[in-house]
Image 1 (cartoon, rainbow, N blue to C red):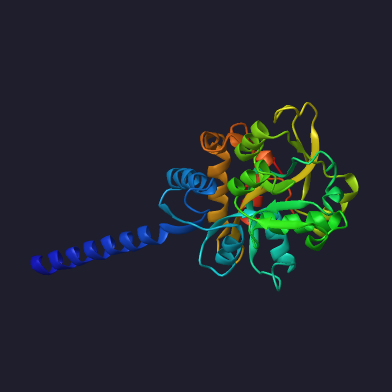
Image 2: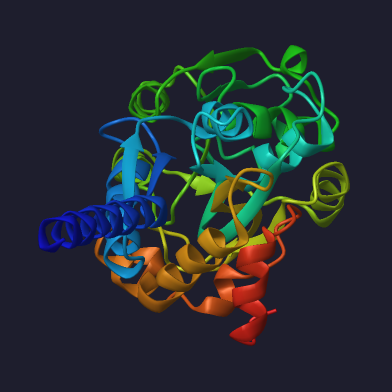
Length: 318
């Protein structure tokens, strides 16, 4: 009898241990996070976000995967990644089925907005005062298919131009663009990047350079075509010989998730963790050093995941 009781107790103990183990593994969550290419600015920021989430959300592991804006949209929408870094205007184009997307991309939600990115056209030709003045000029931007290149076409269209109206269009890295402008091979270069941008500072140290404004009419057209655009300025004295603010356009980098596959609880917990420690990310990207929860919660033209919306409402940011 004693042996029978012992065996029953032992079996109960094993069953209990198995139950606890199963419950523990069920609570654990492994997430795939697509950031940017190794060596780019998104990759180290993604690593810092990974650390915050793993420290603040018990049982959560985040695996970083290299990616890019357009690739990340596909990865998240197809369930190959749980989170991804994205460019707002590309995500807006994706959910609306606008070029370069052939049809509407389903399941994309905004988790949180991050730092602002600026659409900067720097010219070494003094006659280029507006985008319309690029007609007949030599121009360079990033390779085709990149969010920056798509934005270049949008801004040209809003100024009444296409690539065909330009004397020359080069698709190259920022470094190569800067070298071409230094050598007089192009009259202006266009990129969506931070302010000040290192490449643009380098160019201004070699050539007299000015930043080209985006007119109100031009901005209204790109805003109508894509709700992700916002009105921003290049602040005064951001670059040499630029004593006044330059009105341009921009959009935030943001974190996208799949509305259908990510639970409300997971989205809530990740958003809360990031809001709590977002300013720590300033060590990786200075633009985030004084970032606020309210800035994270701004309307970017992409619906919030219900979990992130729940947190932002509780925090008084929505």
